[in-house]
Image 1 (cartoon, chains in turn blue, orange):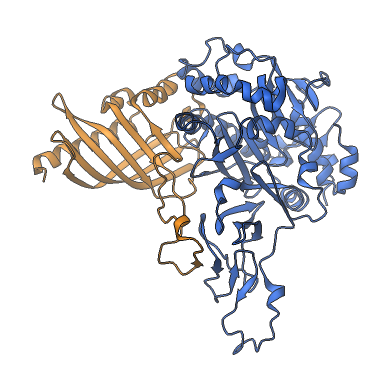
Image 2 (tube, rainbow over the protein chains, first blue to last red; image 1 turned 90 degrees about the vertical axis):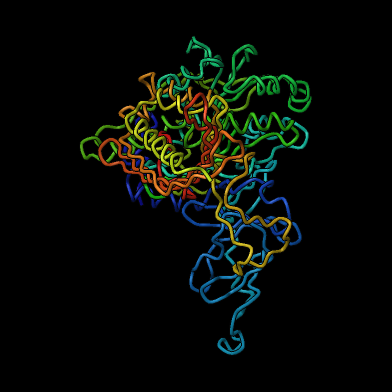
Length: 428
Length: 181
């Protein structure tokens, strides 16, 4: 097993390029990170009715997320226990039962094996059907509409795993009565990059914005300030523990334009009072730009939520959804849908330029000479503080503060540290 | 049915449009659209058919079979003339890194069918496309699909007032959609 401490120098914050292309590192990530952590599966509104199902992935493993006939949400490895054929090949639908199309084993929407062709004639009733249901995801829990799962039965409960990132997630998930819902459809696309580049970018990279995205900002000048320094605003990055992170504008300058049409800005003003009632003055007034729940689910103010599915050391598949307040007026939801897809989907005027960076960063990590030169994660290293109002270790808005906590957690998990030990060593 | 002369006009129009895109003449390309254009490429969802026996449906009321997203759902493009202008303005900045260096594209348009439109000055045009994109050293994307265009005659010229692009992919097999289809 690789010792991750050989690859991440946490004193000087130098990180080996091996993290971004090496097959051995990747295999160890699948085992030590993706098979252990809580991973995002989908939103409850996507499976609102009994029988509703969606396909998902946990790492590279396909899973089926389904609300059973009694209304309980479950998740199962999407592979037949007999010969391994994928049990469900659709992205979404409604089912009482799924039939494997190879030999016909049939599973109920609660994962139980309910039908085996030739059970009497060919198996002579010697197969214990109770033992051969779909492999369940060890733990499945929701946080305010977001369904997560982990294949590690020993992982701490979801609420504990999320920790204080919920303080910030509530700004998205709990600012209005009724919570959130997902607009229909998923943006899926591929990218030849390592999964950590986009995760760390959404987690805490306020530094790239005015270089990478300058063309989109200039072209959208009708609702973006001409002074690009103003885009970064006042604020901070925070890592509220467990490798999660988010970028916050604070104190909020209400006159600062947001990424979005006036209707979205007006809506924020309209719900200000309700937000303050539900969340208190600090959270009502703060803005977030983007964040990431370790390891690979990111959220963005566009408004969207997305997963960076790993597909090998140098490839990902992105699944991204538009998330809106359920109680928002239809015209506001429409404005959010349009704003998100035009800026941060595969054709998004902002998104396009991100992919150029991540793919080239990955590709250029291959070279044997390039590998001798570590990447620099020291930006704002000595500027940490804590705050009375806001949980987490706080760093400057433009810094690599959150990235350092992300890779700190990466080292802990890659070293095979137990959950009990990790919880103790995490800096909160 | 539109006359053969109109069919020929439409064909020439679509070939010219393809050439303008491949030659990076985006300002001239924008002139081919009406001010009220809707340029739309919905996402697609893989679903079982109504006849499928792979699942036993629990609740028919919640079993969707249509692959294409609705207009109020997600799309890769959902553009107006203003936002198409904005996309071109972005390319003009010299800082749109996903297209700097540029994509090398070849838009091939086939299977053109021209039918009567809803209005006297409009025609409905179905056409298939194979668009090849090559970029940097070895990046290659091939986009295949169908376009359902509505063309309107304005001041003697055909213009596109509606384009629905049906891309034959579920997961977009590209790192972005930084070109136009």
